[in-house]
Length: 115
Length: 117
Image 1 (tube, rainbow over the protein chains, first blue to last red):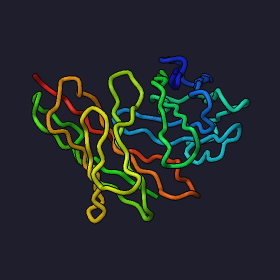
Image 2 (image 1 turned 135 degrees about the horizontal axis):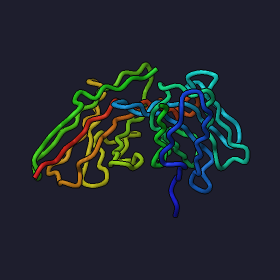
Image 3 (image 1 turned 180 degrees about the horizontal axis):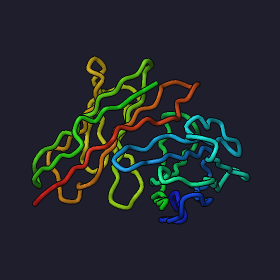
Image 4 (image 1 turned 90 degrees about the vertical axis):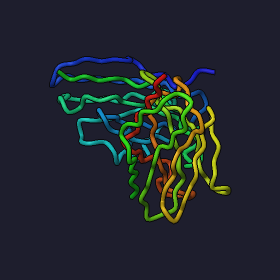
C-alpha cells in the first residue's frame, strides 16, 4: 500500500510570500502530525490532527503558520509572510490512532527554502 | 516535558565492525522509546521501539537497543554493519499513558553513521 506522500518535494520562495505544503496520509489513519526539521536538528513537533480537528497546535511557532485537514484525510500546512528562518524540511506523519504506542509513519518531507 | 540527547553527532566505522549509537533522555513521566533511521532524501523509518516488557528490543536490519531505566538510556547497537547502514539515526521519546500528549514525539539531534569499506 501507499505510504505518506508530500508535495511538493522542494519549494523555493521569496521572503514575504505565502506557501502551502500538502500531505496525503496513509488511508485509514485518523491521526496526522506535522514536524519541522531544521538543518542539523531532529524533527520538532508542530501540530497534531485527530480527524478533521487540530487537537494540539502547541508547536506552531507563531500565527503565520496554520494547518487544515477539512475532510479528515489530506492536510495542508500554510505559511504566510515567509521568513528566511522558516527554511527547513517539513515532515508529515500519520498513525492509525493517537496512542503513543502506535507507530508514526513519515513522509519524505518538503524542503522549503526561503530566499 | 521530555528531552533527548544523542551524544555523538557523527560516528564513522568500517564495514563489518560493531557499532553503538548512544541516546539518553530526560523526562518527569514514564516514556516510550524509539529509534528512527533516515536515509538521504527519504522520510524517517522506524527501526525499533520499547513500550514495555523485556528491556532488550530487536528491530529491523539487525539492530537492537537496550532500555536502561536507571541510566535513562536507550543505546542502539549492531554487531556488524554494512555500507547500506550509512544514514542518520534519531532517538525519540513520547510520554507513556492513555491521556495527555502521548502522541508527541521528542527527537534528539541525530547521529550520522558513516560505514566505510
